[in-house]
Length: 163
Image (cartoon, rainbow, N blue to C red; front, side, top):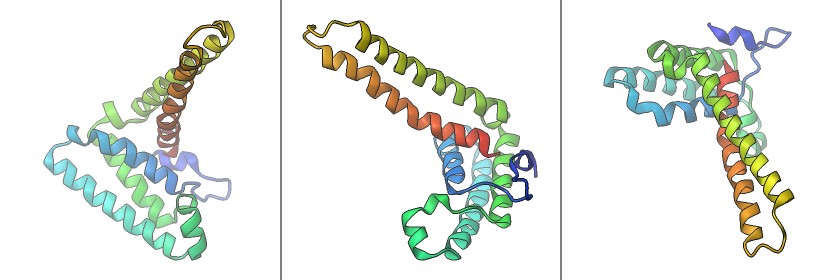
């Protein structure tokens, strides 16, 4: 298995869950246009195998946990293997987009955008006078932008660290 081994627990058990699978899916889906038809079919087959294996994992868990925390269910050996195959194949097909360094750079770019937006929010709240007619909107805008940047940052963080 490739880099998947780097994220093993001390007991030798893979520490992945459904959120890792969703994060990689969110990275894969918007980039589907870069694949040829054969590559799409290959990745679709691997994605289907992963979802089937993950469904088996979910079927073994209590229905209440499946309902309340579906993404927190840990991946079994079979699911982890299917997950590693999918990510390895993605990285093999287009390392410039899906290799570890590419995922890390994309994550770092979103992290920087989030940090700059929070900084703009802080500076606007600190230095703009309260008497300014649109003070609330001027302060709220960078705050909302930073929250909007936080979602892809977390997703890309999980996708980059999952494997």
